[in-house]
Image (cartoon, rainbow, N blue to C red; front, side):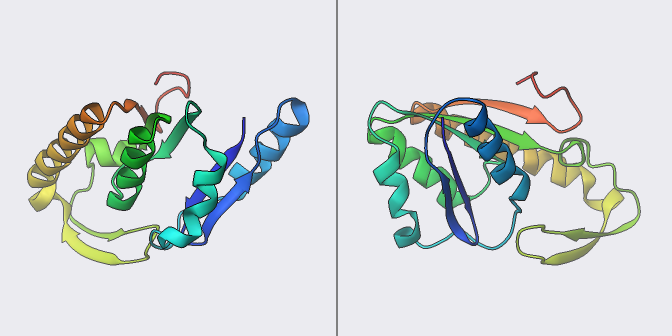
Length: 158
């Protein structure tokens, strides 16, 4: 197994191998990852196409709400790669426990939005459910398997 990590810095790669040393290399790389920046330009992702060959299994891990990321998964699936998405979401996204005024911050872009949590809760929860349903339909149409994990639940549940 190997690791391809994509964030605003581009593509970071741990080539496929096996054994305890490989596990440690992947663990160290995962530990160093940070969500930041926008999706990289297509040229920076070219090594991905060289490393993930037809018939390979690609397990994508993320929130699934980046349009460019979903397009990439769809392209990989249509190019005969076996693709699965493990969608990782927070309990705050699921439950929206915010009461009065709250500062919402996007960890990838740093953008902030001030809002009244109680006033927007119902609309947010409906839009969140709609977005998740639309994503699931899209993944199914492309033959991409998916599961959702919540950060407040056991890691092996999804």
